[in-house]
Image 1 (cartoon, rainbow, N blue to C red):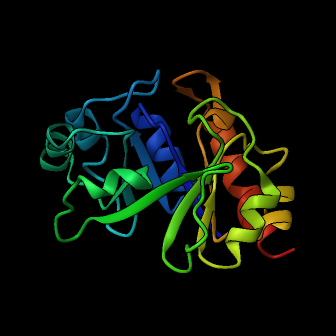
Image 2 (cartoon, rainbow, N blue to C red):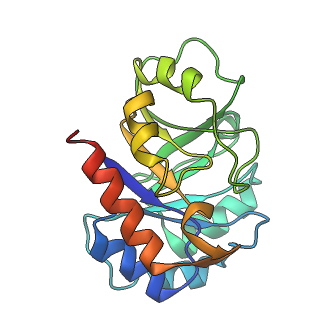
Length: 195
């Protein structure tokens, strides 16, 4: 089970995610209490293992905003709404990670990797698991939206996603991650894969 910990803002949280077995770490460059600068994100990732995927999380970025993140942070993946990719150029080595939302997924998704969540990002609201389950049969779906240690195993059994993504569900308060919650979430998500 692929696990992404998103909205990281501190070195402690990043290292907890890595040590607990996260596959990807996400840094928010959009309006949010979790927003960091490209320079800070790059610093937080300076000593991470090469296999860990570094994700730039944006929301309707302008080409200039994306250029600043791309040049300073140099992410492995860019996560933003699917429609945004029509206006953006990805460099070699950076993959698209398009976001689709409840009720807004066009029918032709058949392959690739997508993130599926509720209408608003970073609000801790559950995505529509039944809709997600249907889409997960056609693509590598990463489920986000309202996940936490208490519900991630049920979400995985219900949706059968390729991966899961969490941000608010592992926080003490908006923008402040809790190391124990990060480790517990990853353990529960990885365990659910074997059930």
